[in-house]
Image (cartoon, rainbow, N blue to C red):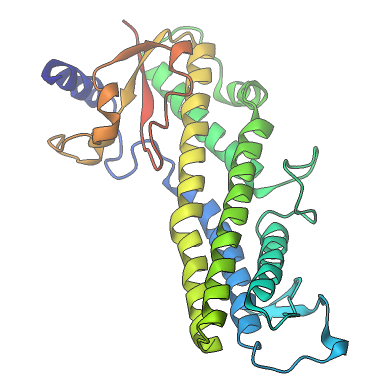
Length: 305
């Protein structure tokens, strides 16, 4: 492993890189996370206000679901707002879970149908925009490295980028991220349902219940959604890099590992990525190896021999 580590550092030092952002994906990831976080925050805001109304007596006229226009962060947002129909905690919690899933589908996933499992063909979607940005960043970096290596026949960058867009399965990449966010919605809906039911059964105040639910939704934003976005975009970047190398005539690659985040090169690599240290792969065989783990930040470096 010592020799492999030495080779890995030697290969990486042959290419200039930003020690804080080695694969140059920070801004692309941050842009999508900002959008995702804002949408989840809107769901959380409406959820808090809804839970705080649970003490209000309901009349027959209020039964059912209503669709108000709620002002959230100064923006008018059409949302499905729940009216808790039942005094029984389990039924009330189930109704709230149904609302949460609908709200997340509309406000986060941009889908009117909670049962929709893929992005409809021809529809613009934030996951597609982010995937395209990752592919373009990867293609530009690959082109620059091929030119630096002196590979002959490298096409002009503009022409190369046009071809790269058609060479990468953008819809597949975006749908994978969409599917994971949708799965997250249903799983978190079940946990929020349990929180609400527990709070009602223990006769907690609506303020306490609202805080517990709000904290859970905050966890969705800071943990699960962030991990999905970061991991999927790094994977899109890694595979787009490899497809670019194929078109540029690169035959073998080695990994740009996470230990490069230490500018002095003396930090140990991520223990989960140790298997990549000093390894050399044919380009086609390297597809789907990265990300090695959730939140992985590895990438690929071209080799001539």
